[in-house]
Image (cartoon, rainbow, N blue to C red; front, side):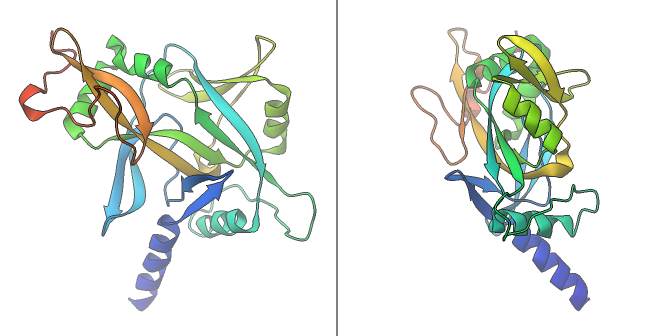
Amino acid sequence: MIKKLVVLSMLVCIACQTTKIKNETYKIATTSPELGSIGQSDKVNGIENNFSVKAFPKLENEIRVGIEIVPFNKHLNNVYASKAKYNQNQTKVAYIDSLPVKPELVTIKILDVNGFVNELNAQYNSDIVRLLQNTKKSQIITSIAVSLSLDDISKVRQADAYYLTNSQNKKYLISLFKSGKKTDMIDINPETIVGYQSSVFCWAISSKRQWYVADIVKDNTNCKGNTKSIIPKEDSKSLFDM
């Protein structure tokens, strides 16, 4: 019983961690939610320790993302190694602090927020919008830090534009472009995700008194302008209740 409590405490400790990557805070959790996925944060005593994925919106258009390559540091390696203890399928990273050349990871962030918002409001994602309206506190994963293979990192370096694409069955891939031509695709293995950033939805009402997703902003950030973080109960008519 004591051993189980110790393991549980270690898991919670790992889950509550955050780390700085290029001056931005990434959450470290026992789960590894994929870029673009929608779900909810599970909290214990007000501290986030998990992200439960609920849905993957259908993307009929490519969504521009930004990719940056950053070296592993000692702290990141310790966090990644700690997660590996509870996930035997996690890709191993050969990190040696004394060597000048360090393993690298990449951060992938949704840049075309407006494009993603348009996808959400499209008729083919009406079920997703209903979910958002009904669950209230849903979030979306807008950035991930992931450990890619040397081959995939090389492909990233050779490209000059990157897009989140939906191949089939709501499976997301990263499409790589060079000089306007598609050069390759990368399939992100969730087991290689080190950390993530989540964002929340802002709502606006149309001239027909129908609520729609108007913006996506970072978690713990206020909605701007005339947008609202929560649809008022007395006026929660769905965008698709025509």
